[in-house]
Image: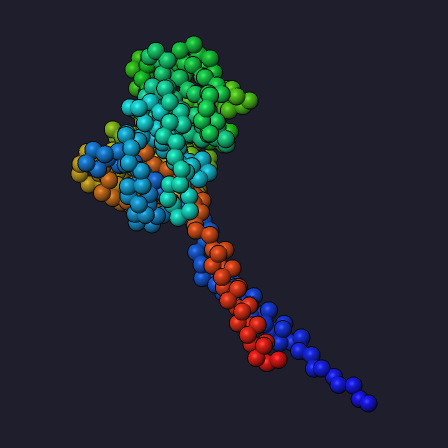
Length: 345
């Protein structure tokens, strides 16, 4: 008696089915947006209200009133957190930027009790912010999570800051590798000066970078180049971030109106123009730097701002997760393939 053979499904259709599933998933993934994007954050005062706006890298607004609070001044980025100083309230606030660029958490008193914190900079997991003891400029170092200050650098006693002293203010900070670059405007010393300090083991050691002679508000580092705004001259100067030597004190001298704060991202330099009126006032300009030379510029990348003073670029804002969509596609495809198999059985 001959045995009855039950036909088996060919392995080829099954392999083809999995190939179809894989192709579909890859195709859908390619159509989805990237998992992270960069955004520009800038302060403004429309109708006298302190505002932080969020803008796409092409200058279009994502949310021109992302945060409305007090007197926001200097901005810095730590991962997905936006740190904001308020010199009138004497504090630093922290806003966590989540999926799609929205604020998902905030701590409006991350650090408090400061006096005129006009600047902020982040180095690794620590942040630096200026304050005053009596009438002298001093500098505090905190964890980016806030809490108790790690180190207090006092220019009244000279501890940690060497000859960085005066009774003016500290309007600008920037990080250059493992060094901290500080702008000081003194009422008793030079009209403006820049010093660089090495950050090592919780101590600051003065280096040989010193740029006196003009009042400045904005400073940024791109590679081995240091850029400094000169508001009164309407220029941005370029200097060596290694030894402070002047490369071109009028590196950018057109299209500016009260250049104030600077931010660097990749090979691009962004500047806010806080002039009170006239061409270019209320603009954020973008300049592309290549090998220390200006290769492109976009004047008025962002426009219509009122007294923009702080700016920062966040390079990794998460997009809404694509995995739920991918999982849904996979389930739908598997159901379709099972139905096809049942129909051919």
